[in-house]
Image: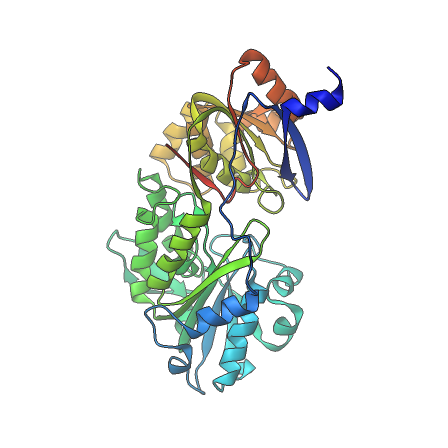
Length: 422
């Protein structure tokens, strides 16, 4: 069969890989579904979306009735590991604060690091924009300079960065998307883990071993604990956005830290939860840079894809991973523990942040065959309980040769899209 004729019997799908794209060909008889988010086709002006949310808060007084001309304001923002479009968020918020009589010297922008590394000055400038960085005080949260304010029902000590607690007004920003153990990002997450102590964060994150600490579950015990923590912190205003797979702001929500978050969650569910009939093979891209910058980040796509594959089926994940494992504890667990059973046993006996991701991959590897197409050395791929696959097309062809009737689903934006089995 000549090439032009063979294309009539093939479905070609494009997958993000780092900052580039990869095409794969799937025989039409094997192609199941291209699993995509239900994103708006018509986009409103981002500035109008943001302004509308700020001026019409959910279950909250308007911002003009919350601040006063003498208020000391802390604006909490995401750090460099998150894809929140903070610079876009800040301008309409700052414009309103200026309109209400607030001056630059009354505002402090606080980067919520959680347990992440410190950022470079260039990273901070990139996040908030050079103009804002040059005129407004911008600081990083320090997990060793936190003050105790209470204890949650589950027993998490709530210790929050002093600079935040000493403010008159706390405004939390961020983006809402699916999160693999907190259910969703955004909302109270800006406080815990965002600007909390190491002790608080670890206590909260230990709850991820609970069976209900799953992606897309708003009642995840991790999230419930985060939201309990804000009862001890006077969060005055929430300001969150929802972005699409092209990083456009498609919705925004503002107001009460819980109720406004729930409003955003309902939008995320409509866009990114997809019910599918499980297939024999799922090919999933983490979504390209920065979601596939390392294996630690790309693991989220595996969690999102597992609902689309049959028990005993295969998942081929496409993730460049230029920064390797991306977390020293995650890497240590994978290198030192030789079997999935070893990882799972250790995780159940000894919680260590970073090790949790090794445990999630180990559990999934016992249910499905995992193939990883990346820039990682083969030894590293194998240590993460995946089968190295330099050529995604060759790997897919090999699996189809073994099972000619296999059905193949494809997820180009696995970091965003959550599959649930029908």
